[in-house]
Amino acid sequence: MIRMSVLIFVALLSLLACQDRPNKKQDTSFYNLLGDVKSVHHVFDYSELDDQSNIFANQSMRAVFNEQGMLTEMVSHYVDQTNPESAPTVIASQYLYDDSHRLITQYERFDSEHPSVINFLYKDTEVLPYASTTHDGSQGQMTNLKYDERGNLISAITISSDTEAKSEYYATYNSDDQLVEAKRLFGETYHSTTTKVYNSESWIKSETHNINDDKSVLTYEYLKSDSEGNWLKRKLMMSDKSGYVIENRTILYH
Image 1 (cartoon, rainbow, N blue to C red):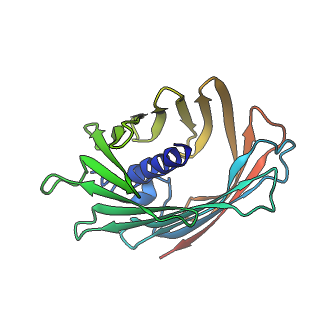
Image 2: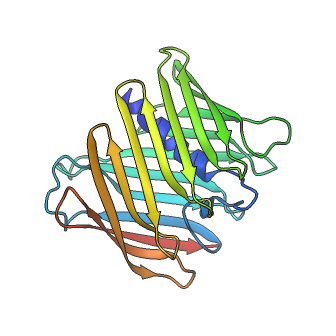
Image 3: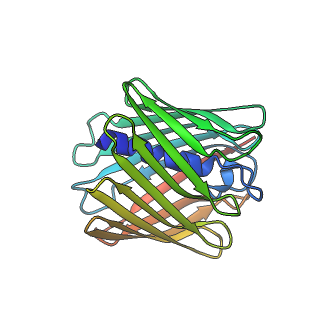
């Protein structure tokens, strides 16, 4: 169930990015990227974090976009900071589109396992999918999707056809269509709420995470940006740990 929860979460992030909203037609806008971005390589440095125990964290992430600004590939490496020499866990995603630039199929591979296949369903010429189906080996899932009047995804309810396990996702946005709150529930055992605050440059200033009975606050300080207005280096501070994490991004443009 933990593995499937991770894949559901990744799929939700991907779906958020791949919406074809009337006022935000490129996936790059979901990542607050400006300009004709081709790829982003995002690396995390935990060496200045005093306490690295109990951290299963993102080590690096690479996103690739086509010339239409649509996400075509995402590869994330996660590492156990208590054992940094161990092999990282890899989640790799690929995205296929139709001639109308609608996301049709998404492949999710967790480490070297057989990929999950996510197919998105549309009504006639609609640009936003009303549902998706996920096939992961013998297990199947159906997700029903709802949007607000501006085309933002506001809920995704997933039910497994085998176990009848239910996962729920709810989201709210500000007037700039930026995600400000996301809620996730997996059955009766997991519930989380994430709230985001943005600065004047539309970069995330802070995030508050409530997971079951645990609460943490992430605060960001931006150190470097490029000529397109995209940040290249930032410092991440955690309320429950001393020290900080340095994040570096290398951005290539078409």
